[in-house]
Image (tube, rainbow, N blue to C red):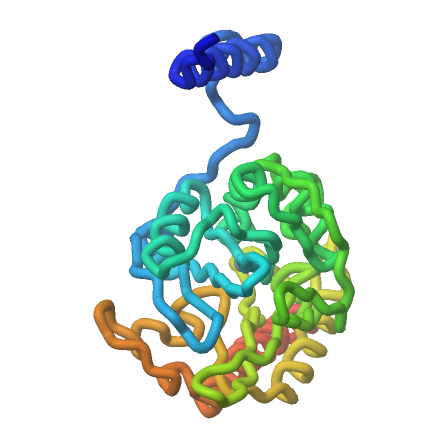
Length: 311
Ligand SMILES: [Zn+2]
């Protein structure tokens, strides 16, 4: 007997899934919205978030696969890869293109991590998990926000609504926990404030016979709407930021990168077409300056809020 026509079976599956989607959504939204996702998309107001940028090798087995501003990092190993951050909605095709341009495959991602559970860094986690079967690991402080699609963001104590596809977190991480894959060992450093579970990661990579200490750092920037002395759903936020700056000032690395390209000066350090250079992102002075800048912004805001309170 001839084997089943694969085009026919694909078509059958497609029709079946469309019918299922229509049935599952119709009760809530009506048939006209059968194909819509069940979260509310926020408008993307920053063009750099979805502006493509070529994938590049940062150092050793660390690659930048994000957009012009939203960093995503691929850490490759012989047993599959780790992806840190996904960017905002609809980033997956850009990430896939970058990964393939570097000679790797999206399908080989085994572990998904994030530096912070804000929609501009995690909105495609659910999609990539579905495509790859990768396990998601996140600091416990960010698990609730990831699993409720951003609804429990502390800036909105009464709920902000589901703004990205919720995703189940397979492993809950604590400060100092390690993530191991194919000979690479990452250590999580809990750097709360920006989000409750904001995290940085360190690991050692090899390049041309030399070891490099790598830091993927989440900067302690403060979003609009955050009041350090008045966060009902995060009363310890000021103390958390202060502790994060103490910890980050004590860290040293050979190479550092961050959650936004603008945070670590990607576009000052690299222009599309530049050849690989293991020294390109060696920048300890730039790190110290950037941490000091964000700490100063924090202290300035804290002082202003205290002054306002005492009036
Ligand atoms: Zn953020």
